[in-house]
Amino acid sequence: MKDSRYALKYSLIYSGLIAVILLAPLFFYTVYMKNIHAIQNELLLKEKSLLIVKSMEEFNQNENYYEYPRFRSFQSGLYDRNFNPIFTLIETKIKYFKEGYYLDDGNAYLVVALPHKRYFASSYLILTNKLSFAVVYEKVMVILFSIVILVFILSLFFLDRFAKPFKQINRKLDTFIKDSMHEINTPLSIINVNIDLYNRKNPTNKYLQRIKAASKVLSNIYNDMDYLIKNERLDFEKEWIDLSTYLLERIEYFTEVALMKNIHIYHEIEEGIKIYANQKQLQRVIDNNISNAIKYSYDNNKIEIFLQMREDVCELRFKDYGVGIEDVEKIFDRYYREDTQKGGFGIGLNIVATIIKKEGIKLEIDSELKKGTTFIYVIPSEIIDHS
Image (cartoon, rainbow, N blue to C red; front, side, top):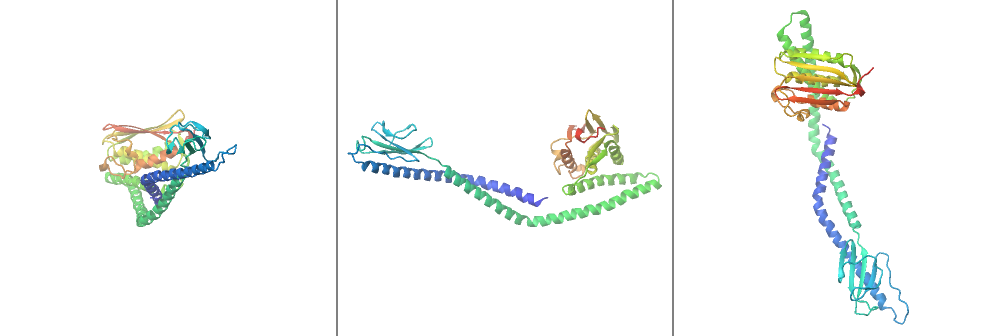
């Protein structure tokens, strides 16, 4: 388990949840700030209206020319009692003529009633400008971003502190598993070697054969556990492997295991097929398929293994006549087991799925309950020796 990834993952989730929770108050805050901004804009328009009125009051009627005030950020105009323009700088079409302040389609309007015919025969002074809430949205986004960053940093800090005891337990557990794996491997190797030495000097003993078959099953479980522990830290170097020869070796290895259930392994293997792969990873794929085929086959039956070239790809098939698979999608989940009575830890097919995904190997599964299952691996042309 990678503690840094764990902390980062849940910090992101926690920050996202906090951000979602904050959306409601931020929404109301945004509405409130928009109202404040609109009120400030109204006060600004009223201030400018007073400047225009003041300018008109200061106009000397004896003068021939009056220069109407112009502003860069908004427009204004004078209108008669029927809201017909007497003089206007407003370019947008005004939809509603009513005294007061109102908003329409992003524009703000202020309609001020004037004394009748006092200012150039006008009755209304109208001011308008484009009301933009960009400043409000910018502030809201800055607040939201700041909160999310702060929450993320704090969550990282506290999750790291909360996870510290679990990290220590994980480290101890990892050390324990590694030491246990090492301690298991030594006696397991001694058992296998001594059985082979005994069989060379003495007649075949069915009890010893069963012991050896059981030790091979245990070895397969050990290899899965060992691969699971080390695969993220090791760099698996690849080489050209004679798949045909190697597959025969693994079939021979599991023959004694199959005989425990009186199962015969039938095979048709095309010679000379070579692939570019890592031997340890290839062994995990083959061993897990043969082991599972034996485990889930009915007694007194057979297993069929085929290896052959089909045009420019290679097809590897494992077929058993057993219980079948109820949920094909779940069998690749780590620790998932459809039948807990069959033993194992539910990690074999998860390892297989990880390996073939990296190598671009396609997998097809044909399964029928109580009749059997076929695993078909299609090895791509890129990793096959066509010479």
